[in-house]
Image 1 (cartoon, rainbow, N blue to C red):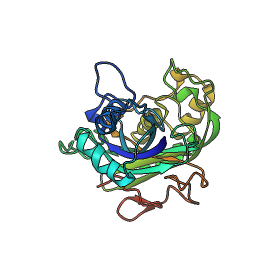
Image 2: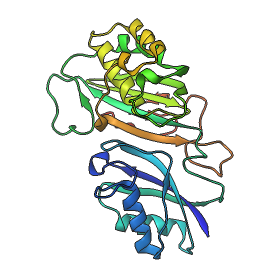
Image 3: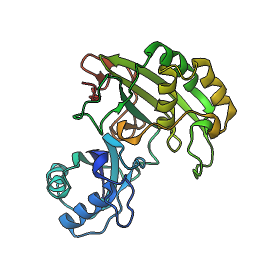
Amino acid sequence: MRTIRLMIRYDGGAFSGWQRQPGFPTVQQALEEAIARICGQTVVVHGSGRTDSGVHALRQVAHFRAETRLQDQRWVRALNAHLPSGAAVTEARTVEDEFHARFSAVGKRYAYLFCDAPVEDPLTRGRVWWAPYRLDLARMREAARHLVGRHDWRSFQTTGSSAKTSVRTVRALHLWRRGQRLAMVVQADGFLYNMVRAFAGTLAEVGRGALEPAEVLAMREARDRRSGGPTAPAHALYLVRALYPRASNDAPGRTPANPLEIAPRGRTAEGERIPFD
């Protein structure tokens, strides 16, 4: 019995989220069905976290256990031959049995893309959130200072969540502009349901002048979703990667000293390509 870790990219618009649900196409279901076709075994594929319908992934991590002699690199080719066009496995690696894509993770990194061009580009529809008003980056950065640290984030959590606690540590949140495109990249030890989208919606309100940056602090301290800003749409949200301890068998996404530094051409310090252009 082997534990095989996968790295997956997918277009969120092609799926009804990560988690298997009857009657809807999901990434988990597509992977499990592809594995069954390859090795004739029914397995459960565990992801680093669930993404909602419409949310994209650049480096989702998952794992499964199976009796197989198929070499790791052959798993990549075999899975991609059976997956729908909206998803692709970029890496498969046999890891220690203790590895768990979800429970071994120590954090996640997400990106949210805005565009404030005067006219919406039909070729980027479904990839960025078009705002029909100019977004003030300086105001958004001032407000973002209140969205970092260890706090109770109930004001930015969709009601009805089953999370045991709404306290999380947001390690960094950075914003950049390139022309008429803005990117928000945020990293935390964990996120509440729709927390990143609520951050994005709130910062957009600040950027267009509907909220003052200082009001975001009051929102956070209210610990009440009714006090928080709007939830931005899912189609501009990207799971950039899950983060794992350095000792986790060379697991992907090990946290560097400055993980959110954006280099030229829209890449982070770890070489992740943020779809910025």
